[in-house]
Image: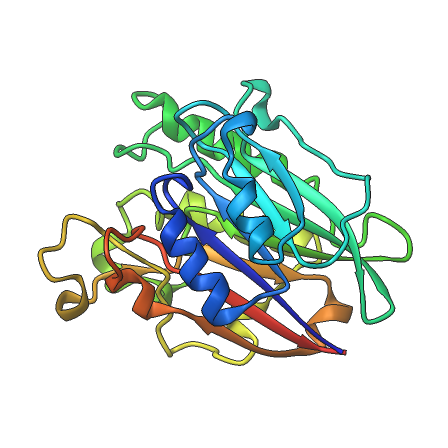
Amino acid sequence: MALSIATWNINSVRLRMPLVARFLEQWQPDILCLQETKCPNEQFPSAPLRRLGYNYIEIHGQKGYHGVATISRLPLHELTDRRDYCGVGDARHLSVLFEAGGKKIRLHNFYVPAGGDEPDRAINPKFGHKLDFVDEMKLLHAEAEEGISSVLVGDLNIAPLEHDVWSHKQLLKIVSHTPIETDGLAAVMAGGAWVDLMRQHTPPPERLYTWWSYRAKDWAAADRGRRLDHIWSSADLARQLARVDILREARGWDRPSDHVPVIAHFDF
């Protein structure tokens, strides 16, 4: 059995629903996790997704900001979890339970705070919020539920490795690649027994990017990207990973998100 799980920060699902439909029609992942949906639950565009065959939809949204959604062609169990990280009421986490290849799988969908512009929590509360959020993620373990495998995806807003950014030296003091952030994310991964699937078949020094700034006049030519979007799993699923696709071409679509879809393919 094959299984494909995609993640994409869509930066407003209602505005970019045509892009979501295009992606689903062309790539047909079994499950798509969206971040930064920017709409309350009652306004989420479920109808066009169901017409495309994605009949199982779980949403954690809020008006105008943040928001995550998981849409699936596979049945989702009722054991859905929406955690309020840092207790501020943001819609930034959603987990679902499903079955594939004879396994029960817990799928976490995250949108980690961006953290503002200044990497100093003393003068930038947004950065402090980000650090606290990542610190709370350290409690999440890939083997937390007996008999259940785990996948964690989403826009984690941190490019952890030297070759996850266009210039390690120039970005060391830029939010998303500062040592305190990268060390924090590494601690989440190590403490939770997570495997970085995107680097399993594509180790450094090959560069991987999933985000290119809107500020670049010619993003493709400049290629100043960062790997802000991630797919992790428990060790048992990592052994069954076939490949990971980064859909770079989507950054050049009409009215695109600044992030592109990432798809993990498993072969059970």
